[in-house]
Image 1 (cartoon, rainbow, N blue to C red):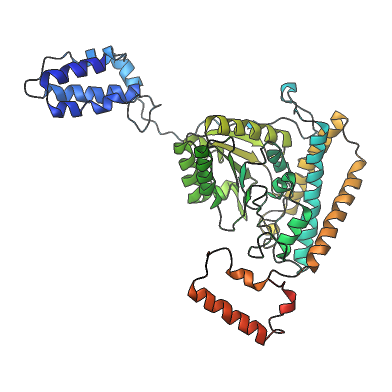
Image 2 (cartoon, rainbow, N blue to C red):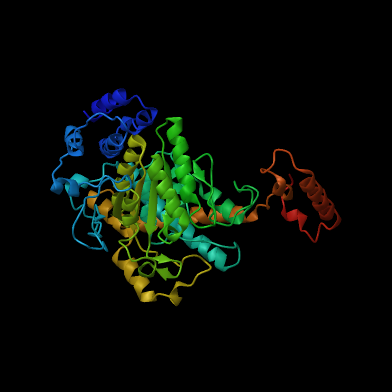
Length: 468
């Protein structure tokens, strides 16, 4: 009705100024139609020779909007807060009800609601469990190797093994943007122990050609973007990649992992807002493990964790028990459905505890007690929890743990020994993969290095490097 009145008025005046005011009325939002229609109606009254028009409240009533003072106070029609209502109480919002934490099983492996029983086969469950043990074995060997000076750096995943549940819920074609503790995702996708070792040793078989620090994995074959050290850079990158996936029209999403410390970076806010406003099929997976290196979470923020920020950006959000592998699995599976089917971002905050030091460059005993760590390991261990669930299902016997742990360590040590013996990547690889054709300055530098290496082969230890 509001449109019809506007068209009649425009025909009566015949002025271009009045016709210009019609454009906002073609917008689909009823609130926009009412807001701009009211403005147009008021301005039209001021036009010389304008026809007699009904009062504003008649036009609003014709548009289906209540004109009582009480109803008008309830509706906020400003475009920046479409879901707000008016109030006569002066009150600052300081907190809202805390977001609950989704859980499938307790620490003894008992499923708390039969409706949430994981719909997985015995083979699928055992594959996940064995990878949890493999991850532990690899972390133990490589952590000790760094302490012996055999590799330069390492980060373990002790206490956060349930992250593998998220990998099990994804499609292997989904693009992953990791941070530091997503080795379990790669394990689940088929990244071999040899490939892990080659990367940490930066040898000639390293897919990254020796250009990255240890644990900065990446593989095009498994759709896992190479990890970069700068914190949170992967968050806006994941949003952009998800937007590209949406434009391609496929059924894949991007998945971005990060810690709660990274959520303090500006890239976190830029990435989430971009994903929300553009409708990007991306899952943001926050590992809230209690510490950003040495800074405890209680000193990082005052709000309700990281999940509350997702709601602030208009993103579907859930908080889960990050030590409950089946809660992680179910939440990620549901999140992927939202992302792929509805082109919407989702934020998962997984509550967990970092048992290990932040990295081999960190000594966590400087900022937390050893007893705190020991208590957490005993009280809520993701691997023990998964084992208890398997035993409750009759799919695992307790005595099998020693055998699987021994087998995993043997496999890791074998790959470790082989990787250590391989040569470093060819020196010439330093100049590849950036320019299609080397610019003159880099060509000059390459020739200079070649000449120096030939002249002083022993000094540059050329026999330790592979030939190109």
